[in-house]
Length: 248
Image 1: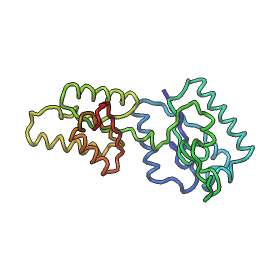
Image 2 (image 1 turned 180 degrees about the vertical axis):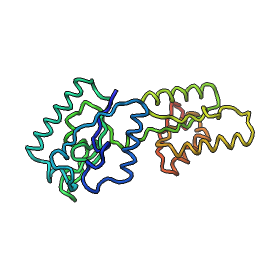
Image 3 (image 1 turned 90 degrees about the vertical axis):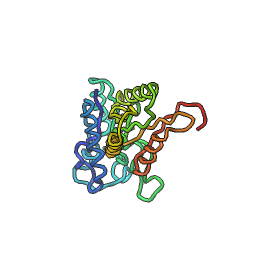
């Protein structure tokens, strides 16, 4: 089990001069952390831009410096190297790239002259576009793997459904915080116990990248609604699941 990874995620100094932000470094670190957490081997891709332009380089667009026959030939050779890795190992889980990179972008790349309509082009970079059959994620998306599962947890059916979601998410390499597993599962507790549980849930939001919320029922559970609102107020994305066919 392995992923193919843009090499600058492991060695940020491979990127063009001055473009790496602290936020980027955080994404790189958490992406590596996720792989280690779930035993996913990291196989670095070659860096076409570094091999062609050198290590210490200014930022630039594809059309400015990479739109040459020599660079195209290099891409062909590097593709052959990666295809050989895939032949020996089997298909990877995915490719992890870096958006905006002319070679290894996922959803968008710096392509044409600055200020032009083609400056930022949607789609994969010129290297990763050679592997259309392999799923690809931007490192910022792959790094968001810590999930807070917000859901009603009062009946046996609700708790069993939550566990099934927990297992599904875990099988896809997400680390899931499940409130019912930390004592939030009975009415028989005093005020201090309530406060302790609340504080534990609140602390969990500090290590959460995304909230997955179950909003079944004629009305969404009030506690779940609060958790969704708290996440939204703190800039944490919320993904809502509703299987109930009734209009809420």
